[in-house]
Length: 483
Image (cartoon, rainbow, N blue to C red):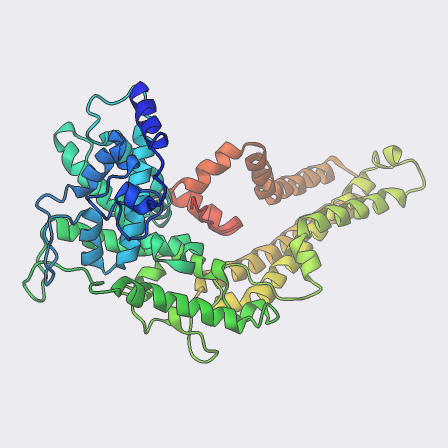
């Protein structure tokens, strides 16, 4: 700790420039633009570069070793891992400079916070790189788990492979930062960035492992290669699509079902169909990039708001169900010319109160019809399983109306046959209540999950098929981004 205080004091106590002397001359830095630390001028004697933690971070980035050099470009000794990635994947040089400083500051700050300090202050502690890699890529790992695909980040934790872990870990976080630094408005769609990183990390692994291109027989090269290739071939097509959708919104006055917002574009990457349709390298002819009103295109992928008076019921249907059932039961009890607690002792009133389940199932049926009316455009836009669920919900809700009608009719048939409220009538009332309990089971399950959120979180994150089926039926799976 004293070492750090001494180094920081050295930065703060640097003598001021003499009158007439420029600050640039005083620190012997170049004319290159930088934020905090001039990393592009190796001869610069900036005070922050004297910190051992900063020197260790710079040394970690400079450890290119025997990595395969990018072809068609002269390699210079001062190039580091960021330059290596920039050449292989077509990142802009200014982006490389920004993320170099960004990464050095991250690693240096993490190294300074280590307690107790590492024994070797000349190198970045391996735990810092692994922790930073996992924290930076947390949303990517969650996205892979959600889609049930294997991440393309390979880090060994054996002591014998610590040096390779350091280099691979730095390459992965550097690649992600370079993607993020050049993504512009794509940062508002974090799962799109995960999709891009997933494929570029796969190509990075092939380069590191010495793959051979099956078509040319030459060493494998990334599909995004050349000057400003990442910006031109990846970012620009997606950005142009976003801009076209914003223009279609007419400043928010167009119907929501007619254009895609950031959420719709982001949720497109919540299913595996993005791998089949968008592919890699990105297929510019994919329906994802179609923005005109004619032809087959990717439309809304999440909630579609159809402006209608019925939204008052559809959006708050559970509240309406509670109010209507309460009013119905209250009217039945109040219709008797006695106090409510006296009226409820009558078997006839009890049987009449069972009709609230007819109203409940009927309102569920109305809700399923409104779902079709409001969300039909999603079904037309390549979401066939949503259409299947809508039809099934209509059939199930209508089926419950029929089931309740049959069991309720059996109660009155038995009453007419016996001419009184006999034990057999009471048994059929119990049968009706048993059916009602089955009908209410999903609502009771939702109530339990609301009271015990830890159970709900477990079911949301699990990949068990039965839980995924239940989640699909009741609400649909939702990816909770950690970005």
